[in-house]
Image 1 (cartoon, rainbow over the protein chains, first blue to last red):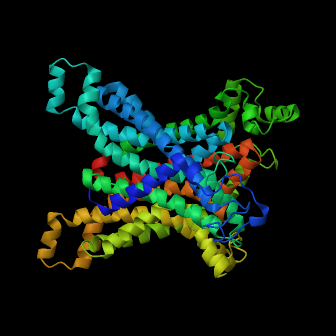
Image 2: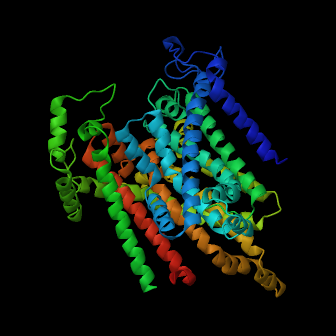
Image 3: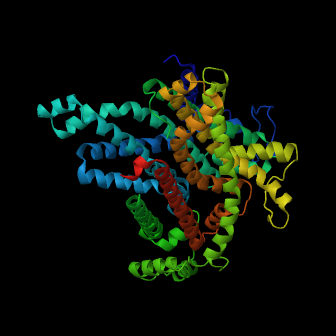
Length: 269
Length: 318
């Protein structure tokens, strides 16, 4: 656990979580402070990172945007991990037509381009926060279902599962107490990497204007709106860009280092 | 091999049918009026009765669902994707034009990412234990963690705004002025190539490192085979399968990436068309674009699987 990558990224994510929870209390300015006299100011003069095209403090926008990013990425990965793991466990344990049907459905989901499908779905559902979370959550189910499926197939042949069965344990007890614990190690790696991908998708959708509408602060949308004024004040684009990239990088590095320490044989795909 | 081929082709047909059906059903099975969903009705926008009637008539939403579905599938079979609600032009015509421009970015980007990704991955694998390896690992991680629009904006800021070397965005027909066209292509191509390059490099490094630990490598070294020949002729060849699978995944992912890249650089390809159609709620164009991108995605997966099976005979028998 003394892996320095892990410590640095873990600390960064703690800060991010703190900002997501308490952002409005620590931000230097209230978010709705539109100030025509302070448009596109460079850093300094009371604005640590400068101001955007509405004269809003960039640092404040970034602090408040953390909440959306964390809500969407954690929420969608939670949905995907729980549903996907359940599907994988059931498919792997029962086998037969149940396995066939569930895993074929998972394969079919993988045959859609996820980002394009998310754009399509959100266009007609409307860009509400809940819709964003559920859509990304569903798109991410296959990766967790596959992991849980593979692990379950290996675990159910083990002697302790056989012993539990011989002792007359009920099916659900066997699945939850004997098999599920095997899934945790690979699952936590996939959760960390999944949160990174979810942030990429969320910021991409927000950047294209398909994320939650203003006044919700969003890193992706800030970049989209300020990109036109990049020549006048690049800070309004650079800082939120750094925020997104650092968040994704932190989750990916943690996923990588978890994989190295939990199971070096697990591969990237 | 033949039975594998037939089975895989049948699955592809089923998947394409599934894609077309999901896209067709989605709007129509949403709770509420599909015409409202298509026009994007919400708290901020209420379409007029006249707008709703126009959309219902133009899209045949007033007919029964089986009737609509039959005429939709019939149209698809003839290559008819309907016509745009705003311009009136056939959707298939615009898509054909736009697809060429999207591929104009995607093909060079993926060639670049595959060759460079494999080359740098091999370098990283051979540098194991030296400083270069972790440095390349970090660069690889950054490469696929930074969003494509961030890469795009940074390039615009440096190469277009600061140095004024390249135009910040836009498109020029290649046949009219190749040099001018190439200048427009540089930044979007690099932006699109970076993430797949990083992923290909990581996969190459992992598989080559694994392969280098095998017994035959030690034997080859012991009998004095030159390292260059060993790595490029034997090791890389054996490591190629998983690398190829990852490149296949990157081709699929590049369709998503191209939507964002075309937006950043105002490149008039399929992705830009999709976003313009969403802005004007032009349903036939949205539907046609999503169908095209999804079908290409399915076909890319098919090609990846087939080349994988061709190179790995053990898979053919399954």
